[in-house]
Length: 308
Image 1 (tube, rainbow, N blue to C red):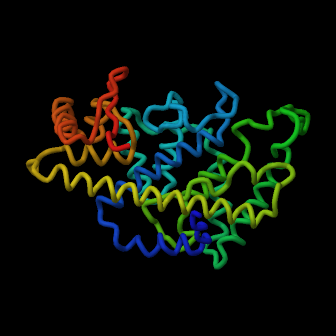
Image 2 (image 1 turned 90 degrees about the vertical axis):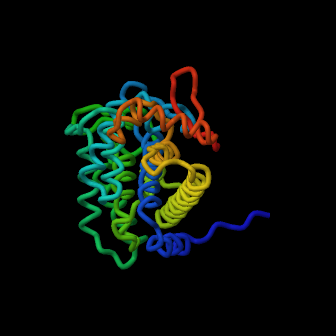
Image 3 (image 1 turned 45 degrees about the vertical axis):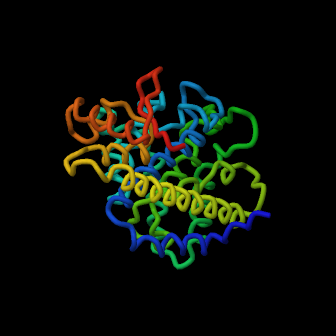
């Protein structure tokens, strides 16, 4: 029988205990990986206007750097680059640079700004669970006309809105909470606790008491961070083992860090992210292929990790 997951305070305490021992490389990798996870959660919770249906997180759209939701990705990365703690903001700017786009300044993330302002007003908090519950309660009151759990459309003050419109609270709350690890005493850590405010918290009728739902969400978010941290440790160990014979000037280690943490990338994206020539990026990819760390996807020339 598999062991039961640790209660969220214990899981977060383990993460807190690991943070002082992260070197610069591991911290940077974790920030990139957590950005990638944030996008998966965002695709799950955000209702995209051009589709308007539930999303399968396994689809290519949920892969940060390959998603066809280019403008939405640009908006999210831009918002994180301005609102996130320094490590996450830096990771977001790297992703924007890789895609060859500048920051966007649209109003589409105003709900996330409002949610973040409300959360910041409750910090610092001696009791994180109580603070989150109060915050969600405030957001639910603000968004009462848009709570999920009824007809697809709802009338409010003479106007008809979709219950699942992007103005709803869930996606904005999820991103806002993710960017405040200091709520749990983690400071400006190189991570985000993705999924702290799942859509289930904004249903008209809650399936369980709010503290219980939040405890489950916190535990899942902590487990995801632990999983990403473990994966990044393994990726960097694999890099050090397989690339130790390369010249110190080789960009292969940096290319591997981007691919293992941020996800599949093209040679052009790698060159932009590292500010090197396409030829230099290609030579680094060849070195990684020779070390059996990456492989080329022939259909679109994307470089993938060969390690799972």
